[in-house]
Image 1 (cartoon, rainbow, N blue to C red):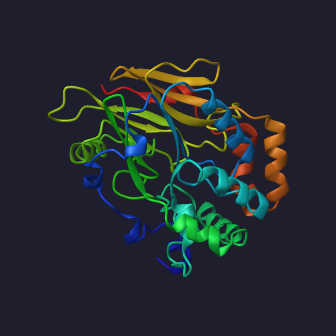
Image 2: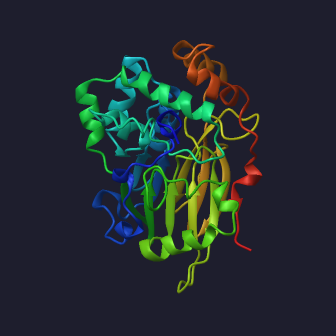
Length: 322
């Protein structure tokens, strides 16, 4: 594979950690929670960020808001980039591949955007993502990049008695696609995920990175209760056809009260929910177009999804083990 086609598909060694790291005590600031919001793939969408904060403010009890990576992407306006970063870093944050590559003073050309795209993603999309990352870098300052470099790749939280592994990608890599809805449809892949749960000793993995939401149940040898992968898809752009809302993952002791609840299930005495991040569609599109007009790389890759949503439905999200 030549360097041009390798960039954006490889997974750098420093992205990797392995599932055993999660077999540790929960972070003190993420322990004893009544409500946990996991917001991945914000993609620099400032309108979505404001709506997340509004929803979170209304939650009762001990609560935490975690941004689990790729909170930057479309925000090439330096003022927007700075505002997004300031708000995100006032909460708990993990770095995604976007933040990791932005933080590099001497980027690895083979990493490209750091997305580690699988084979089913076309090379034109990969090449555009590499160029988007390069353009986004021009919106940053050395101080901002240094802040991103200090962010962790994973955390452990606890809601009730449920241990939650917080990741951007999957259980072994910051940019892993092991929790992609496409991979989770493959019966040959599922034993690997079960081994990850065995080694990690968590009940839930909450992830993003792979752009489409999926909540999938797993039986794990030696356990009396199921494990769950909760992938919120994207907070900053649509996840369902003809639905302009982003999504966040909510794990809580009480159910969400409001029309934004898209998908919900109960496990461990908790409520596991995909909550819609609803913003005015016309305003969201206008803000995107101000930064990424027709003919730009992000417009070519993302505007059709922003305008109409992907070919995906709410009914595709929750998957029970059979």
